[in-house]
Length: 270
Image (cartoon, rainbow, N blue to C red; front, side):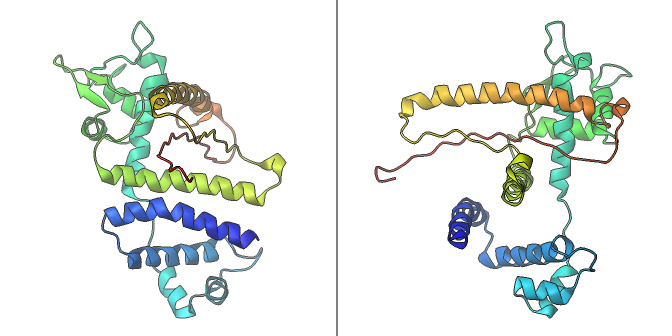
């Protein structure tokens, strides 16, 4: 039955989430409150029959919560976490540095940049790819997570070709929310649309690999995935009107491709 498959899927995806919650001291009651809030938000904002206004009574019926509880939860604020916004801004600066030839050296690699200057400086890079964020704030963030370093001559050097916080659980947990949500939304789209409208969602997996093979597999996966993401980044940037105002077009859409690598131990009976 479909319900059995769904229940199994829920138990499977909850285990790693609960592991993170317990490690960070989040009790069950907090997760339950968040789940109730999500149920109410979706019921009121997304599952409203065409042409009708959101109804607390209908939300109560489909969520199983009392009307009083639905009213209370609907009034709670729940916006985008500041860490997610900061992550997006910093990631755009690093991405622009990697792909934009104006900020490359003679060998086609991201050049070390002076902190200030009207052209080809870190401050100009931030203005181009991070809007109104102060250059000093972006620099402090990238220094803090180990994405850049300051050289003795005062120039700023890019250390990593992707913004992945090397320190700070707070930022990594913000990525947990945004990236996992995108994956689940993609699966939901594919469950509710015909095959010809499906979004790309694939993986390759083997379950009887020797430990000695993993370093090579991990290295190859990282290298090829990074190359693919950089190629798509350059292509998407040509159509993004923040980066390329001449792109034109109508509407405002978001598109992303996420790649992750995972490995674990399996018992003899698995």
